[in-house]
Image (cartoon, rainbow, N blue to C red; front, side, top):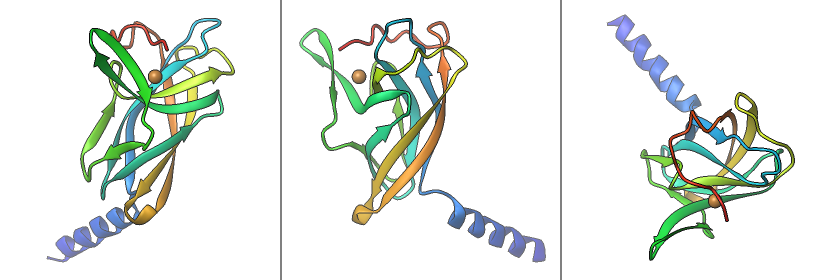
Amino acid sequence: MNLRLTLAAALLAASAAQAQTTVSEPWVRSTVAGQKATGAFLQITSAAGGKLVSASSPVAGVVEIHEMSMEGNVMKMRALPNGLNLPAGKAVALKPGGLHVMLMDLKQPLKAGDTVPLTLAVEGAGGKRETLEVKATVRGPQAAPAGGEHKH
Ligand SMILES: [Cu+2]
């Protein structure tokens, strides 16, 4: 009985301290010399629902949240002007061939094994802002599933 109460209290404390939004498995596709853009991929879950409104990284001059879609027979990508919707409690996957964080105007080549800091801004209900600091691992092309060329 006592143990149960203690456990319940511990669980309550843990959920209160937990971030509203969580990110798992962040990674960035490696680049070759001269390449100025690449994609960052991750899974993001907002407990109460919200919107991923912006992202930034010290390695990139410009960071946008992109989606890919078929227009006729051509795969196109575009920035999401109003951010990415995060339904409450549902993991949203940013992955090659779909949604991604676009890192542009890269300041340095990104090699497999490097760590890239990403800052994500999430807007919750009532306009409450949450900032997430994420460390993404750079993966080489052989580690990433085939997602085709990533070009604008
Ligand atoms: Cu893109």
